[in-house]
Length: 105
Image (cartoon, rainbow, N blue to C red):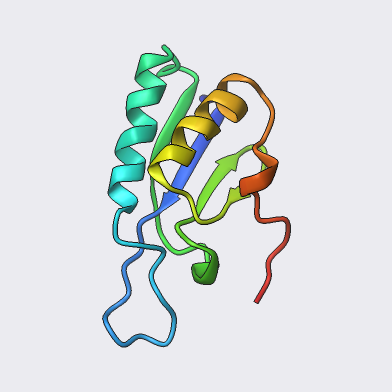
């Protein structure tokens, strides 16, 4: 495996009036913050963060997935990015309070 962890941030945008909402307006800010923290923590050779398409979990967004762990985070804010990197990516323990436990809806 090339990376120990791969972080995917949903950046899918739906048109106004679509039956389902987009994950949020600021997903690219989340991607940028993940990349900043990966660099600050000297993890660039071990961890990759990037944008992703729709996870089909729009009602819970903004969504972030961490692989190979298979952990999905819901309603992620910029402040949550710091917590996810500190506790999960660096510390090895997923952030329970932000996790989407199973596909709902």
